Amino acid sequence: MKVYHLDLGLIDYESAWNLQKKIHLFKQQNKFEDILITLQHKPVYTLGKTGDRNHILISDKEMKSRGISYYEIDRGGDITYHGPGQLVVYPIFDLNNHYKDTHRFLRDLEDTVIRTLMEYDIEGYREEEFTGVWVEGKKICAIGINVSRWITMHGLAFNINNDLSYFDKIIPCGIFHKGVNSLSEIKGSQIDIVQLTKILLSKFAIIFNLSQIEAIKTEELSALTGLNIGISTVSPGSPEVQK
Image (cartoon, rainbow, N blue to C red; front, top):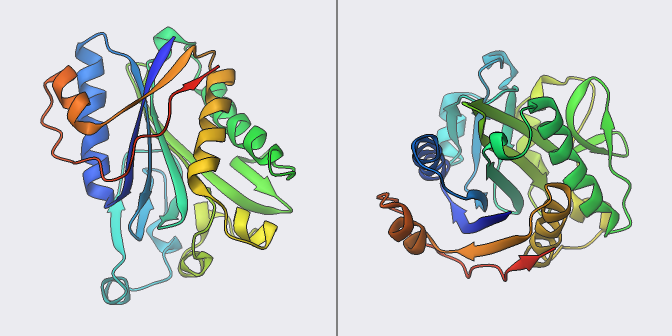
């Protein structure tokens, strides 16, 4: 099975969310390949549909002064932060073509990150009570999805080189007693996100039994779907990944 990989570089949250919704609706109405979107967001807090607004410890005024956006969205989970240096992956997958099991999908997303961490000699693991991936007692990857007609939206946020101080202004994922970490903090140096993305995509290919992950630009996607995407691809497309 072939999927497309769309890399949006650094982008504001609203633009990426609107794009997800357009692609999701298109896939409901048309037979079309699954898409993996990778990107980094400008600073933003997002609250899932089961989240608690009280888990935000910063005022609206301070958020505005620091240039942090805020959105209440339709994924599962609580409050989280996205920002530069964090790799965000949005798989828009039709689970009718894989398996109709959202819990298995979440576990497979976790496994993708765990196997990626192994390439950096780091042991990532699951916590029984919580969704996501953990290293040394701290969360390194948050995961939250929405599934409608067995087509997925949203996905995972993998802390790589991002500024972790933004998490001090929230109770991440509504979990009071555990902190967050990042790959660069653990390794003690900055990580090449382009190379890490390539590794992560190769793990997606293995776990989801994908024969090919083909890079595509927004302009090409628009031509294939007829969608008015309204976003220009701002970074080079990643090389094709074949299993």
